[in-house]
Length: 458
Ligand SMILES: *Cc1c(COP(=O)(O)O)cnc(C)c1O
Image 1 (spheres, protein in one colour):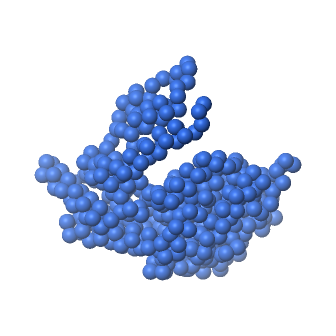
Image 2 (cartoon, rainbow, N blue to C red; image 1 turned 90 degrees about the vertical axis):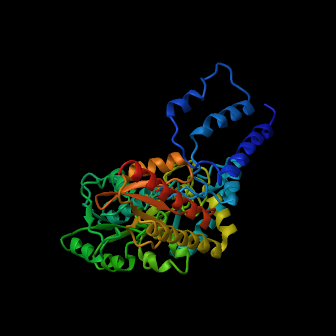
Image 3 (tube, rainbow, N blue to C red; image 1 turned 90 degrees about the horizontal axis):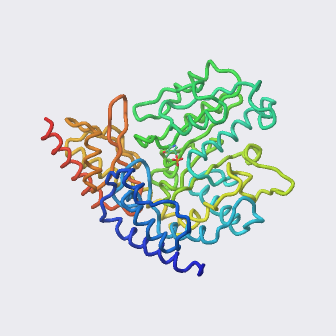
């Protein structure tokens, strides 16, 4: 062992090459998993040197890497890494802090506390809400719904943490028909069951209808949990949260959760925040940082208005772990964990209020630009492009064939979905480095590949 320098230098050399290649390399060419596996070698009897391992590893990995952090990756809602956030993430790895409790890393606990407060301000959420850093909106949804489960059952006189769910008062869960699969997953894991959740009808943009929610609630007695959404994965549509909050606040014991994985960032933009008006009236919010805030994977925030409910649901207790408000593990699913809030702090400090608004606005404007160019090229834009999502139907070709041709071509990458029972393409703009030229080149290439496919298969 000769210190960290040579291994870190090898990693840095690879990172520099990789990052520099993002604007020009083929974005996501399909790779054969068996061929990738064959490049990784065997478990050696005697270990190898760090630099040799890193060089072999990066060489073996590279053919299987997708330039998803680059400017022409439009798949899912992915985001990239702001340089400052990536660098801060390296600091997190280098310092190897366990952010479970403040005494293990006062620095990490305080940075996360500050980053959480700043995020609340940008998102327009209550300044005294509790924030737990999570790995993604999936675990943020679980954390938030665990807090909701605690609060609703406590109000009904039931201590769910102590008693479990057997014999507990039934909580009726309602969610929009366009809700994300990870909310359903959270309901499964928390014992609400996925089958019992009432699916509330949505409008043509996948947004929950407040009138339909009111009608669904008419028949319900007992505690109620409503899961709304800001940013539908196909359309970018945001549930009308003010109207939904009106309905929820008119019934007895009811909680309102917002899955705002990417859409809630609209609140940071003066020109887009009307889309999420009323969000601050909810009880909890799940928000990703690794998508639209462009910090490295993985990172999200679970925000809960009632700090005591989140702490009751998630805090571990043990004589050797005296916990205070500053201790992150009172608000997270994990006990030991890396301080994911550190890159969030770095991103927010580097962008400032204006920079976050610009990032949101730029992506939305580029989505509008893509939609206009697709429409001019004879592709049907199926959604109102209000955020960063463009949903497309392509007459005359199979969208799965088109998405495959786009992937093999390598200029850009787009995903597929099913919208209103028919296949569609999803084009999502969520990377800080994407330019108008990237969008134009990508749309033009997709249209050209569409023409090639249509000519081959008339
Ligand atoms: C991406 C997404 C999720 C899941 O987030 P992860 O970060 O993948 O865990 C949940 N809800 C919505 C609306 C999303 O877009």
